Amino acid sequence: MENARLKVFRAVAKHLNFRMASEELFLTQPAITQQIKALEEEVGAPLFDRSKGRVALTQHGVVLLGYAEQLKRTVDEAVEALAAIGGAHGGELSIGASQTIAQYLLPRIVAGFLKEHPRVSMQIHSGNTDEMLDMLAEHKIQLALIEGPPLRADVKTTPFMEDEMVLIVPPRHPWAKKTIDLATFREAPLLTREHGSGSRRVVEQALRQAGVNLHTMHVAMTFDSTESLMSAVAAGLGVAFVSQLAAKNQLKLGTIALSRVSGLALSRTFMVACPAGPAPHGNAGAFHQFLTQAVLPR
Image (cartoon, rainbow, N blue to C red; front, side, top):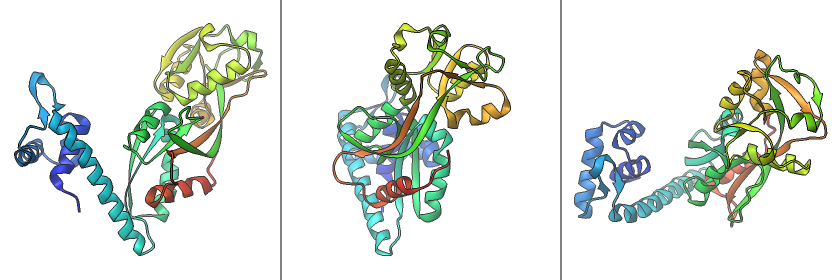
């Protein structure tokens, strides 16, 4: 139902790289180049600037991309509507998830959803909470699964799971399996996630409520993934707060250990976000309903 040339054009525009577009679409690079050339001849103008060793959209390309994405959404809606006639859901569903949710929780959620709706084809994106909310606002995804409050007015959220963040330390650390006071904790080199991460935001808020500003602590390193954070703790570079979901396997292996800070509780709510306005419908609505009604593992 979709124009093949526009599909190729969108892939090249997304990656700004012909090789990566060919890998996504399982086509050869010459085939990608041929499709773009044919589309440029039809449009009567170049769509990409290939000078200076890089690929960039021209003004014509920018305009066409907006319409190409709009056409894709229309086709997706048509596929959903046709599937719904028979009481089923079908077509594409694009969702995003913050890294902790994407890595430790989402696979089981998606497996359960697809068992009920096998005709839905899902595209998954991951990044930190702010990145996923940006993609949602730009209509690049239909739903975003995020950690904590979104801090913006152009989305609305529904909670679907509670999560606890725990303090992890190296296995032979003096704090291992012990409870320490806040004054002692402030002396440690702290490892954190990057700005824009929902995990970091929860840590900042909990410390602030306890009268501690994160900027006054010894933040030794910042990481862009929870796995890197845990590996750094295991290597003895510092201590960190991570989701209990993320820490589970490493705790079993004994590469990290738990500690607690007296009077400091870090719980958060996982939320599903959608654009402000009408409730999600079609595939997005079905996934939203499945997510908020499912009994998820802790």
